[in-house]
Image (cartoon, rainbow, N blue to C red):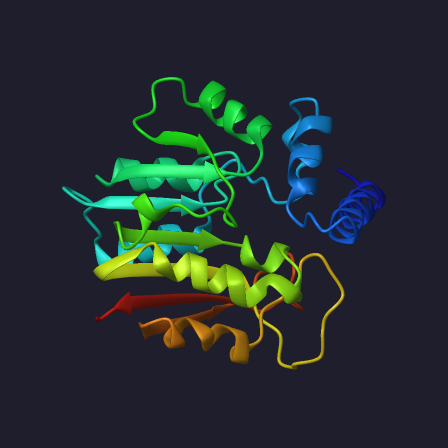
Amino acid sequence: MSEQNRQELRQKVQQLAHQAINENNPTAWFETVYQTSNGDPNQIPWAKLSPHFALEMWLKEKQISGKNKKALVIGCGLGDDAEILSKVGFQVIAFDVSPSAIAWCQTRFPHSYVDYEVGDLFAENESWRKEFDFVFECHTIQALPLKVRSEIIEKTSQFVANNGQLLIITRIRDSETPPQGPPWALSMNELNEFEKQGLILIEKQQFKTKEMPEITTLRLEYQRKD
């Protein structure tokens, strides 16, 4: 894809996101992006068709085994992160607000052990409260506007079981000034809200890529110690 096409795609996504926000439905644009892609992953700006490199590194560094453990993937997209967690032994539930994304996952991985579900992070789901040994959130919070950030951080935290882990991958900004987006990179003050939800920051790693050296990405590992 040419740089011009990438720029046009970014502009399209931003327009859809702001329209959804103005209509007080900040997640509605995800389904539009997946549905209008006509099965072309190049039309999904965040689709890499492979697990996030920072998740792969974490699994390898920590020699993670998910045997007899339950994992939840928030905003699973096209399913690659969920699949690698399944391969290391987790019993995985992966959800996305977009029915088209979930149908795409099921087509890509027809023999998967992952339970792919349509779900909304804003919805109440008491059966998932403190239910998961491992929760993974990658670039979902940053795709939602600042006015709902505290609510999303609270809901994300509530999924983590006692002694369970939360792994977050997100862009980070060094100012409290509201950024242009999407995505809307998180500030450290926003990330500190996870600790107010009963989670302890265990490890923080910073990454930059050759493709986007101006962007700082953080991988944060939290644990619930209730």
